[in-house]
Image (cartoon, rainbow, N blue to C red; front, top):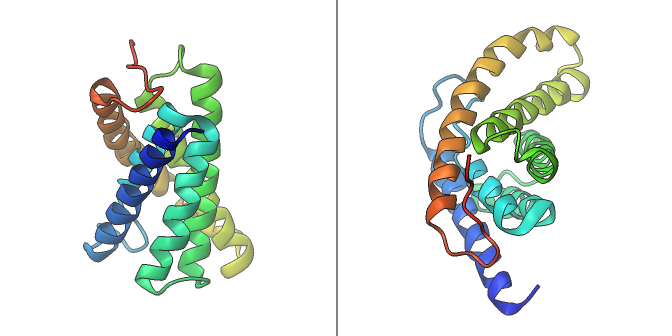
Length: 172
């Protein structure tokens, strides 16, 4: 990675942290649920820098954002970490291998589903210890559809207009 790409990845990371922090200050539509707009930056990072770039943005966003919010190593930190990393990895794999068959909106929806699914699995197994938590999956699934669609359209729009090093506009 050259200096230009390092700077671009750093700018994306700073943007993701900023959005993550600001979004945490907004009221949630439902407890524990956010739009996850910083995931748009993670997907943009995947488009521009591959899986490693997206995972790095997600990891740094979660760690540094939790320091800013005072939630480092709290349950909310672990929820954000599990959801963010599972989402970034899945979106990266889908973008790498299925970008011709699946649009950025579709990849974003899958990422949102992975994010919420990982958080529910963590809640069920470690924090609450009851499988009934998984009954919330349809509600979180619908929220994933809405949030994933929104972030996917944002990334599609931005990927057509950015000049990052190896970002190529999506032609779908």
